[in-house]
Figure 1 (cartoon, one colour):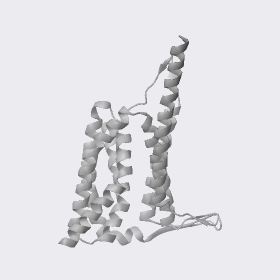
Figure 2 (figure 1 turned 30 degrees about the horizontal axis):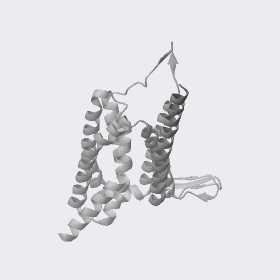
Figure 3 (figure 1 turned 60 degrees about the vertical axis):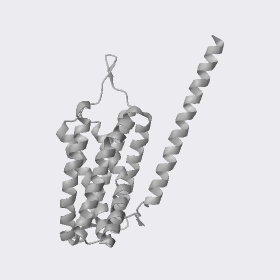
Figure 4 (figure 1 turned 60 degrees about the horizontal axis):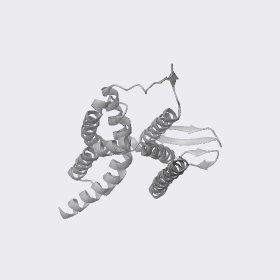
Length: 260
C-alpha cells in the first residue's frame, strides 16, 4: 500500500507537469465560445475528459500492443522513410492541429479586418464545438502521460485516482488561468507561442516514434528540459520587454509634461 501511495504521488506530480500545456490550450480554446458560456465549457470539457481519460487508460492497458504495432510504412528512398503505428499517428495529428491552432490565432491577432471603418470580431464557435475540441485535445495530451503512468505501475486504481486528482486540479486552475489571460492580454501572445512550441514538440515526438527520417536525417524529439527552458526564456523576455515599454511610455509622458 505504501508503494502504491508513493507511486500515486509521483503520478499526480507527473500529470501536473504534463498538464500545463493542456491547461493553456483549454484556456485559449474556451475564448472561442460566447463570453457568458466560457466557464461552463471549461468545466464540462474537463469533466467529460476525465471520464474519457479513465476509459482510455482501460483501453490502453488492455490493447497497448495494438497501438505499438506497425500500421504502415512510407519509404521514398533517401527522401522520406517512416514506420507509423497508432501512437505515432495520434501524437503527430495532435501536434499538427495544435500548431495550426496557434498559427491561426497568432495570424488573427496581427491581421486587421475592417469594413466601413468598423473592426469585426472573430466569430464565436458554438458551445458544443468548443467542448468537443477541449475533450479531443485533452485526450491527445493525456495519451503520453497515460503511457508514462503504465510504465510506472500496473495498478489500475492508482492510475485512475491520479487522473481524477489531476482533473480536479485543472478544474480549480482553469478559470484562474483564463481570467489572468483576459486581464493581461499581453501574455496571450506568450501563451500562443508556448502552444506553438507544444505543437512542434509533439510533431518531433511523433516523428521519433515513427522512426521518421527526412533526407537522411532522423527526426529527434524535443526534450522536456529544452521545452521548459525555452518557455522560461520566453516568459522572462516577455516580462522584461513589458516593463521596458512601460518605462519608455512614462519617460515620454514626463517629457511631454515638461514641454507643456
